[in-house]
Length: 515
Image 1: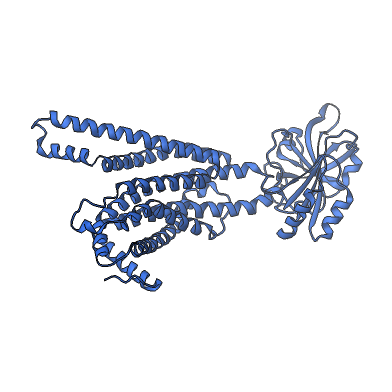
Image 2 (image 1 turned 90 degrees about the vertical axis):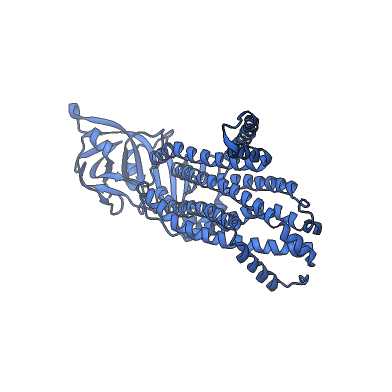
């Protein structure tokens, strides 16, 4: 007789023995392998994108030149800078505007519209400037900013003006000496409305140029940097005090072009891994179906020996919980090792070393594994507790076809949720779910039609096909539902492989161009 009052330890011990015994059968091995592959695919992508995300967050501060920018179309009051310093943060002011600059006199004079940027001492607060002693010469990190009376010109402006280090360039009413060629400015960004070459000068030299007049198109910026908590606190406080013409820029919105490139790559890799999850879901569903059918008779015998419905449910749920944790854990370990191969494949696109990944991909992998298992396997298991004891005498009783259909529906809903989760946005998730549903429906109709045609051709084949063909076609028709599920699973697998093969090259080229 089976004990009804098993404690948790005894229940887990008995479930573990059942798992070891059933592990010799093919169903659980296939189910575990499907879970391992699905979790490994998702966590490999998760570990890689988590490392890239962390590196991007670090680099984004350098690309911004600060931790936070205060941007305005009119001068910032001096009280703002004093308040920032009082809070323990660094602050540097810059002013940017377009202006005509020239070199030489008379017939030899050359002029060019330039984007003039006047910077204060300490600029930039994050990252560094790079300068060269001459045009097309090797560059090096700059030591500070242009000294008073001097300026730096970028390569385009130096070429247009034919300016060399030591030449004088007229900026408004002042004449400043070229001290270096500017090769890298971290916070310049991408601005399609500012295509003029750059000229960098000292902020203290700006009043003497006389260029700032009423109506001048000047962008006033305060660059802030310091402890992350202090910056966040000040950002929350200052947002409510901004007026017309003032705005905030941070690493999340200051350089969107890099983040867009990462988002595209992450979505492609995530959806690629999701195709693996779809195939794994089909394998889990088929394995669970076979497992339930094979355990109907043992459950009926256990019911005859005194096992209650609740005890059967707890035993099998415990068994599958242990199986899911083990398979998901192995999948996370394989995914962690596999993400190094993914990093090596995309290393030529990455210009910065990546920090170690965080624990979030492991949590996501365990969650996906358990959701996948319980979404497709548990609903059919619930029918095992309802197996009648009379099945011991009459084997046709307790066949859980309705439960299997309900299990497939539950699993499809779980898979739909995973698609939206991995896609990361409603629109993209809806496209993926709609495409997957349409393909599933189309493949199911085609498979059912092919089975019908094969059954119709069985009688007209005569003896030319042999008795083996006739019995084989008859078996397909007799188990039409199982045959349709297997055909659809193979079709989805081939669709996933073809889709990845066709789109991989184009999407990777687009990502490389964006980076």
